Length: 144
Image (tube, rainbow, N blue to C red; front, side, top):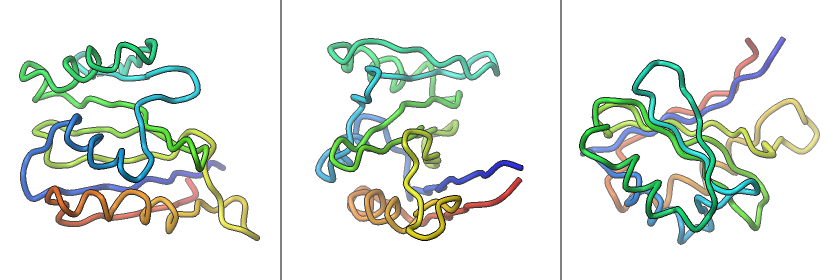
């Protein structure tokens, strides 16, 4: 038995990874995770994640925001240094929808460690994204 947690975010218009990251930076989020920077462009249905050093952030953003990749799912890992948690931010083709999956030191509910503290993630992600056109979200924490 495993657990799946994610938050699907829907924007009123298309967004760029760079714009989303700039909005989230004010809340403490960054591309810089404990292992550097992780990203992927799913142009072959393999979800082949790549890692690079923190000084390559501009190069990573150029790749994931490239017009050539608009029809592919792309992803970056984001990390909240103060809270020591993070996860994958997957942008779907067309870039008006993305999903956050807490995969780095997932926060759990006090008294229920198997359950994800979705309220914490929603409070850390949703408010900064409202100003850039976040239209809605759906949060799930399910046992598979």
